[in-house]
Image (cartoon, rainbow, N blue to C red; front, top):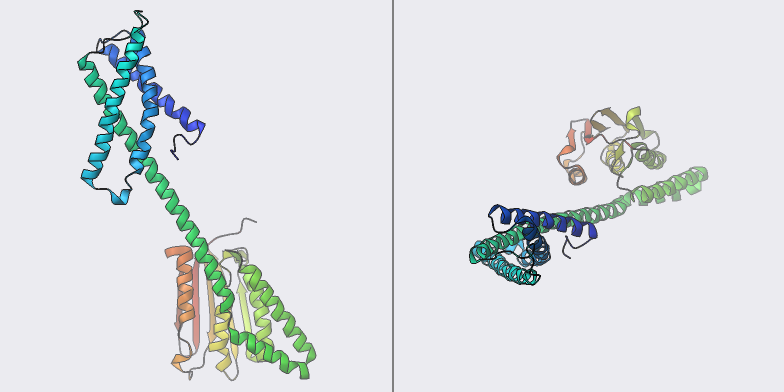
Length: 354
């Protein structure tokens, strides 16, 4: 729909502008000694308002040529031809209105509409119509930009939903199978341990589903989810698995994407602690250094482990995920030594409003 005719406010503003154009046209008639003020105003204002209604067609002229399909000669021909046509129509309407005003046979009605003045009106009408096309063209371009932004936002939402859906299905099946096997084994020798593990597993999956529905969650919510995961793994690995979490007080209310830390802890166990005879300690450290939030996870590794034990796919996926959410404002880096593997994440500091 024509954006200027879409609501009463736009229509009122449009006709206020055309009223001003009418006053300027009347002033032109007076300055060129074509008529006195009363005649000029009676002629110019109604004709400007009429032209304002005619100029609304410029929207459809501009829309008929999408920006991507425009060529210079095509634009010149169509826009110029439409402007000349409507300029001529306006001059004819001016002659008609002037004849009607002349019927009053009063000194204050009608002007001397000669050939020279008709040419001036034709030029003015043509230029005003071209200006109308330009204004509508700008409005169409802005509308296209807004639509593109809406489509981009919708695409981001769809991509985020797809990403979260993948996250729900990416929880390592081996973790679930191993947990169920451990529960089965514990049932015969440690019923209390089996029950505790079952409760932790249920809490973990319940929180996973709840948190993954959100775009951002509090860091302490992610830590709580990780604690359920670690409680299950500690039952499986016993004293082999030790975890030390150094949580900056300021970082507790920082917003982060859901399921950010849990996959990293799972990798630390799978590719580090599991292969060590004596196990080891996973260190999770968070710091706030405005305007950044720093998160680091460090775990021991087996120096004799096969290089192919980990392909780095999960970390590359994490890099891509952070890039899609934060652009160049985030950083995911990792480094491996003979005895340690360390992942460092830097995110823009985003505090909860609650």
